[in-house]
Length: 168
Image (cartoon, rainbow, N blue to C red; front, side, top):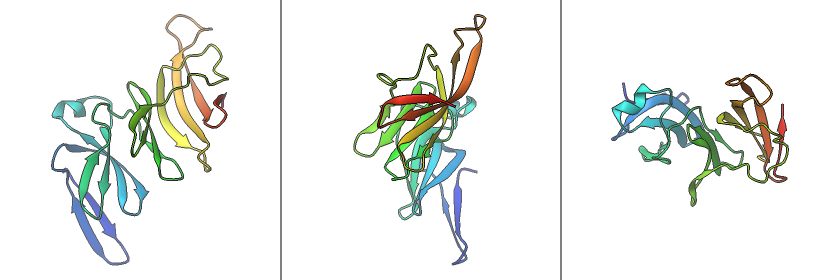
């Protein structure tokens, strides 16, 4: 089934939404009372891989689905910052930020302090701090102090205002 059912419990009312193009990946989460973040596969082949589709939104009042990033597939669920303005999301090409008006932009750690010699290769599971000043990612990458081919994982917190990172 390629639809989302939204039930308003107080009014005992249901609405069913289906995208005109693409197929829902099974991921969804609330952005605000009238908007759902969803994943959409645009082609049948995209559903074969380990991904949860393209970043998209469903506007409940209009019933319209809008794909926000047609070029990249999500590797984990996205996170909306507390202001509701910025979506952090992980793709197989790296970490990304989406903001209305600017669209998808890479989240770059160039100039951030605290990375040491570890160079993260994969970013997943973004999470914003309650104030929206820090952004945490589950990261993994080659472990420079271990045998060749060994990887390490951890939680990297990026302080956006200070351009500093910290490992948890």
